[in-house]
Length: 561
Image (cartoon, rainbow, N blue to C red):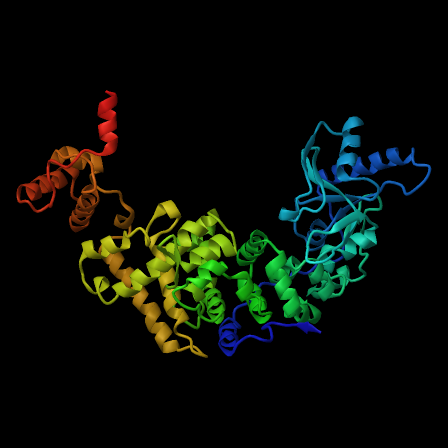
């Protein structure tokens, strides 16, 4: 039995949302080449020839025991059979470690140098030393065939030299368990199902799914990621095992949050993140992979929304980015920065699945922190890449500001008022990778999420999109598109020199006045702004004093002089 799309177990609202996407072609299922062959590049051919000939030389001295044999393992074989170029070459050796084989190559003068040996590191899921080697300007990783035995609560296995069969059986999926024999130049499928599953588009574990996941629960997420990446269906026993409470507990307790975050990040940046999130939701895994720390949860200002909202979020962002015919098109300007920047798309997608935590805060050192911060920092440990940690909390804040402004600031025709709001650091801040356009798009997403209660209120959704399109039209009409990101016409030093004041806390409101004036007077010059400042100062309208206290930095500088 196999899971087909949509996945069973989805809530009614999630199923409705998936039907919204049913008219768009999902990603094409990756099909293997016909005939089923591995085509080597010239570089790969050179590497295989060198290793084959070297093994023949080594085997001349083997009088007892198994001759040395090398196989390219795993993902490279899968990708080659699918017609996908891959540079991730792992060579598995049957009778010695990768480090020992690399040293023999070096001693024989077959390579100039050995790269790095990546030592055993259980925290990074590195249970076996891997040696990197450069052959003819082509990097390969050398490992030995192995068998793995897991015991107790640990996901750190006992590793021994293994046979090709044992090595294939301990891998996550049948389609990832095939070898390319460097000597015979043939694909070897020791599970007996890898090639058939590749042809049929099936994600299946080599051994019983529950046993595979008990050994390493991270493989659940890898199953989902490869299914969504390749457009494959998931074998039913995987779904049953993934829903098992003991397996879910093991995933939560045995797997580092870094590894969970890494899988989610790869999934969300893949060709069909919706399918990946559907599978996780149907397996009941979203509360495990998307969670703050226990401390943050205990001081949270409220309970998160249903995980349906995570699925709604990712589906809606895909609807918007793909300009689905079910809804009015989003203004092209609103989409421009997102479609052009990979990191912005990744950030919006991760933010969309964190919708259940919007508006919630937790207490930390007597400060209120957005709960999404804990999910990103501690639950997924995504850090600063793609501005996840510093950017996503601001996306949620920007959505609140923009949503509120429709009944206040945006209802006016004031260029300065609208411009100042859109220059808010949570809305437009290149330092954290955000632009007002992507912030407005995320705000629209948050409003559309609320247009579903079991089914889509298309009239409400249409009205919402049109509201945002009109806002963009107003921004264009007011010639604000570039002004939102323009630097102040006078910098802080120039303002101080003009007003003959010292730098200090008063500079923040002063610079805001400068920017406000700048927005009110498009095309004005710096000289005109300086004249205005002096006039305002003479009238006492700036609320400043010429005798502002010296900063500590200035005092120290004078003391040194």
